[in-house]
Length: 264
Image (cartoon, rainbow, N blue to C red; front, top):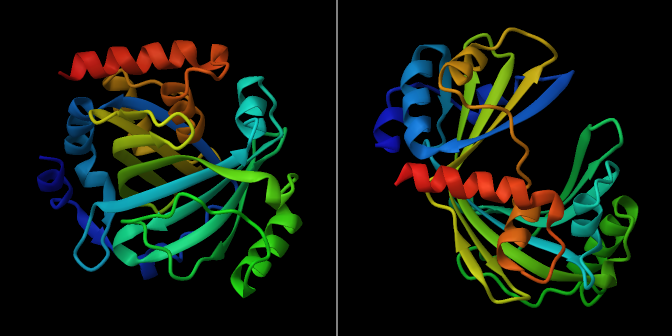
């Protein structure tokens, strides 16, 4: 059904997308069900383009998250620190593009992302034992990249969590905002061995230029879909590792469970 609706949108290419610069960007996340997402997409059809890459409107993503052995990056988020970081490998599965990324959120709630390309990474059969030591030319480059942008020593990082999801990207007709819509979230914790499937949930992120008018905001209000934070790394950890402190995320976890129950 999702595929059928999204093919009814006018397409926009990656080349056309590259010309859209959101210089004063604000980001807002919304969490809802796939059932309500279908209603939203029907209502928004006349106001948005759908990103199309070689005829595909729904792209597959894979992410491997790294942290220190004592989950220092997770703990900073759990304890409410605004100035925090995340390290991940992000794979655009269908495009065969893979990047090592560092995301830094400052105390003004602005997020900056730095990344470097990875060669010979297979997201469909990912390795589970990556260690950032200077063992070859590529990892020398990774070491230098991480030391330039990360506040943690590269050799302290271990793989913690994997996730897979599907993404739709929309652009409004005025080209002042982008929407990313993630569905089919599945997590695998490499420390606890536990897995969690959140199929039925939809994560919507609105990225717009300042306070420009947004067609989607009124539609979200009509459907009673409210802003809600959702870090894939932290929520994935909270759902799959019972040993971690989760106070900050427990109400959000209960909210997700209620949404999934209502989507049945």
